[in-house]
Image 1 (cartoon, rainbow, N blue to C red):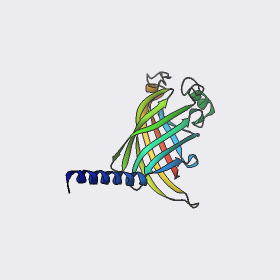
Image 2: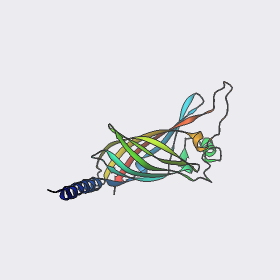
Image 3: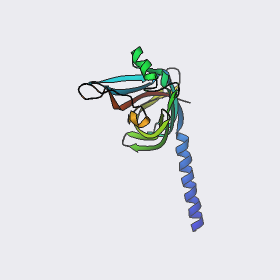
Image 4: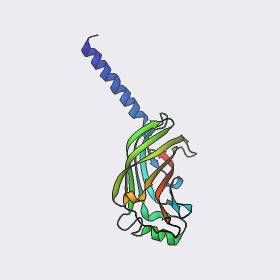
Length: 196
């Protein structure tokens, strides 16, 4: 076989592999009824947890290969819930999420790196109109059919951000010299998604 034929054969093989890989990836829509978008932050001498009730998102995954190739998510900031009405009202005002000016925060995945059984998903995280790169350590927990014939997949993911990087600066100094609220926030996602 001459050089030209070798090159054409090689290109054909690469294209075939690429098409096969693409064909195995599927689109999944986040099932908000079975998903938790949560966070934890230091409050004085303990950790305070909360979550968001309203959100949506989709992703491209190959669960057999354990890979993710795209992800987009939108969270409505006014849906913040820490099980304390007065505190939640404060979180919605200009000191924190400023929901009137910034009704949502978003994440769009850009880079996907498989590391052992986990996937490092790095993307653009936008909060309070500020966009910065954030990496979520993600694990696909499994996939299967539910009793109604839908194919569902489960994932867990977490990331740490510094809220001051996004302009969320509110704080108070305690008599002991410490801060009322920590600057580091841990984001924890427990996701159930349905394959389209």
